[in-house]
Image (cartoon, rainbow, N blue to C red; front, top):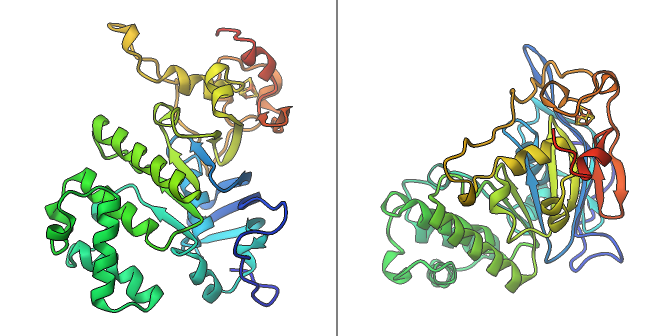
Length: 345
Ligand code: SF4
């Protein structure tokens, strides 16, 4: 981790017009035996208090690596951040010492992981694990910590919370385990909550309940939320804006209703068309042809060109910049106008 100046912890309550969180031209790469994997290539986005940003993309698009860089939980090495800034309330987290980052991680920026069963410790009761947050970070007694754990379990609507305090993670269903993870993540009132595919392992009904719970908790506390997902279907009701990632870059960002109304990048269009629709019963499900790019051997020009129905000759040679469509919208496609106009290919 780079550190060039004495630690100045991010100001409580913010600094002037600075967003709550701002990523600026972030690059993350991994040194491997086969070569350098450039997992994140110049990602920039902002998040304000009370706002939900959905970061969308297939596996390997760089969305989770970006989140891990924000949390400061990447193994460095092999990971390296050669360039970029992660400003939290105006302070670049990449310039803080590890000690100072520990004060931010889990307390002011918290994360919910995809697989609650492997993220929770199987040998400790859930009450112990939730109360540990208060014992370690707030210096509470075991008894007071346990009382807070019951409060939080009630808040995330785990039935009979007091009676279940001494149960182990394997004694809960997948949905209930995810609620326990959420309880741990919100325990210290974080200002930013990163939810990395929080509903992927759950069935559709439980998915909806968890998304509803997250939205409700966010409204109550006004925290900023980054919701990482590969599924555009789950973000429509909860996100304010969307950043679509492909091959380590943002290829489109926009307000959520603009994206659903008319995508401005062929990849976003493909993702939207891949959402199963009940009114199209009996029809074959749409899938984007081809595979995500190999990060060790990225296609030249636009990384999406091998899969793109809009491809023209220059797409194979010229990397598209992130074109500004409006103050709230960008697309990294040379032919965004055609896509936006609904030209069907
Ligand atoms: Fe497709 Fe070309 Fe746009 Fe890339 S730049 S998304 S290949 S049309």
